[in-house]
Length: 467
Image 1 (cartoon, rainbow, N blue to C red):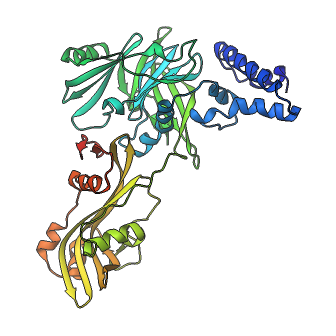
Image 2 (cartoon, rainbow, N blue to C red; image 1 turned 135 degrees about the horizontal axis):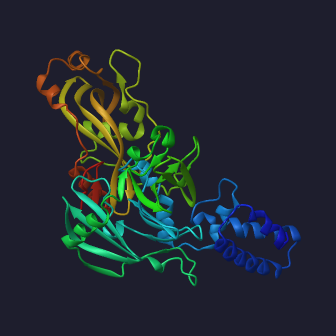
Image 3 (cartoon, rainbow, N blue to C red; image 1 turned 60 degrees about the vertical axis):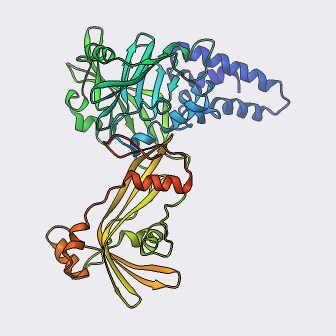
């Protein structure tokens, strides 16, 4: 493969002049290295292609057969940035929000966006990620909490990050130098560390509100035809209001995934506020929900291994279809058991009534389960299901064994079905209400397995300490 041939291969893909020059310099350098080795022409050609594509996994994985996306692999990525980039859509799809990341800045030079995964600084001229910030490390990743929120101020080349509780600043602010990533002499994607840490003052929040007044508007309200524009895509909850050549533009981040694909393409949608015309800019970075590191965390255990509760817990882990149960007077399963996209699954059991007849046992109660995903030292609630049910068990020499789980029909049938299955036990029925995954249960789980988790966060709520 000649240099001119390879140059022509990506010349039509329209990368910026700066990107083309820098990438080509690196391609030539790598080709010279290959030439020095005594290998066949075919191996040489393959080696050059692998140089262009084989290193890409650290940023976005090679997909779409677009060489310009592969070329961003020539920048090295530090370990922390790899993790942030890999998980940036993972945690938005699975955890705590239904929106794409928030845009903090959009200029000719760079794009900055943030979410639970962290902050990403994207160089538009080089078409690559320049730097990342790990927000979990500084406990400043509150995007969907009840009273807590993480706020950002972009001031030139400085980014200030701090937290508010009920609108009042608390704790420290962290200042980052945005020029530290993507310098000419340093092409590595780096995870930035704060250059200044001081106590946050209320004046910072006052300044943020003043400078950002009118800067954000609801994306769904701003875009002319949102249902058609976004369809199944994920978009930023608020769009950034910018001005280009005297024209007002609505700008938001969009995550798009084709059916059956595991990668989310990352776009910037920019709408002319007057005409409604939309420009789409694909960013040379994507995050995959496939290949996410899966850890085998231990099961939740109850103290008495021979108890009825222990048998129900065992049923949950070993026969989830049975735990979901069937609807009374029907063959329909209560809910379809799908592959659990979570790191930790914990059954939450509340037995409110019990009846025994020989070796047969019947219990009534609330039988739920919650799925959690791990981010840093926080457990995020990501899935769950369950309802009131009647469970039939039999006594064995090692405790009990679940034979069936039956759940009542909804609406007016609920009380009638429970009385038919368990008898008229008003107290047991009244107490068999919804049960939440309490911090107490998670504290017990963390302690019994000596796990390194500090907080638990339910959707839309503030995180709670579990250690």
